[in-house]
Length: 137
Image 1 (cartoon, rainbow, N blue to C red):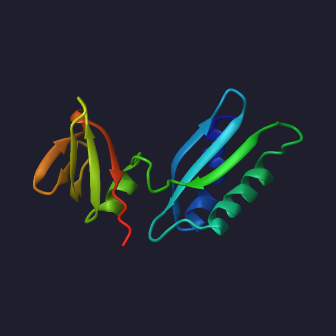
Image 2 (tube, rainbow, N blue to C red):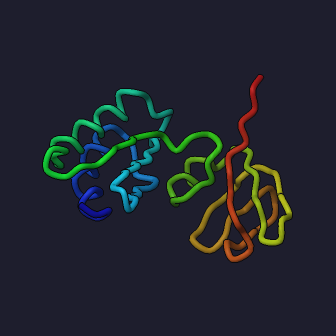
């Protein structure tokens, strides 16, 4: 089984849960990780369990040995897909620039070429990663 087959097998179930795929990885040892995020709100255990069930229905572990992890994108992981940036508009982010500089501010806008943090447009060609800032009150 490969990444494309996995995406095809789970994409409908992911959408039905109000989620979207962030990442699917398959290691040489057939360790599969499916990372999802909710369109609105947070991913819960039931979302992950539903995707796990769909995977086990689509791919028989007795025929093809694999280990499966289904998880949320997490609060400390960098954004990977456009929907994560769009969902985060209006929230605080850390932008790690190439060369090591870090910019902190409110994500105001996203395009395929750049993001706007506070009043600065930052092209993706200068960015290493963008992460949400989580503040506990």
